[in-house]
Image (cartoon, rainbow over all chains, first blue to last red; front, top):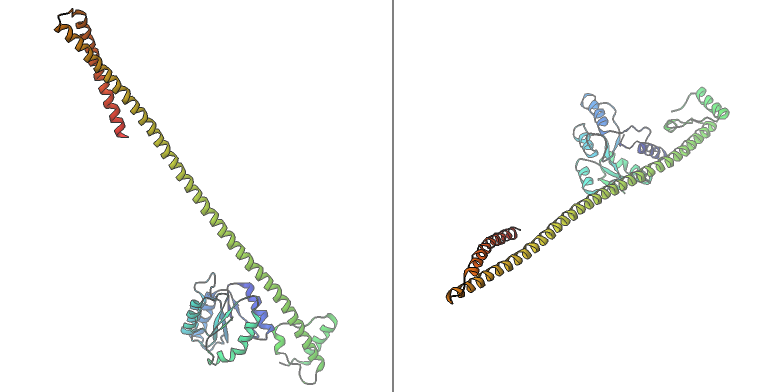
Length: 140
Length: 189
């Protein structure tokens, strides 16, 4: 799942993931409120509902009630966790990175024109995130 | 996932006749099956075409995204310039107001200086006039006194002294009043 207010980035991300053979299906949302509603529906009412294996959240989601860090906090602490989750943002603000880490983000991917090498590196590390054996990492 | 033979044949036929190929992530889950090099080749072509078109789209999307970013930055710079311009205009307006205030103050000072100079001049003239009046009064009084003491004819000088003293006293009071007025006006400013 990708939560990002920039619709154009949805296309970039979906194509990059497809080319890198990272995912078969990507749910791209442009609002954290929408994602929040989906997770609320799954947890705790439908706890066995198949949820995204991995969630990429933008830091600043324009038009949403809360930002990516709060979204991660909600998923990790209110909606039962259970998925690999991290930030994908053009920001490199160390304070924000630390905040994301504190709420349980597992990675921080820095958005740029050349996103593929970072996603490829992330793909290699994915198993470590899934098993929670890999520490927090920033992909620059 | 292995497709049924009829579907597999249909796909190969469409590809051959209409150059229409499967695309999308569905290709990643379709298996060619065993001993089927033709369908394996078909799937390979489909994947290559899919990757090729995705790469093209990705490049275009990135270009648009990059242009959007540049446009956003340009808009930001424009807004900053507009704000700076507005700020500069406000500063210019403030400076104009300040200059006008200084000009008004200078005009007031100049006016005051002119008035002060005029008052001082009037003061001097009036004082000189007063000195002359007193001097004339004293001289005529001395002459009248001499005339009385030495027994000379006093009728003409007496009436002259009397008239002159009246006139001089009247004028002296007028002059003193003028001096007081000038002094008051000068002190006030």
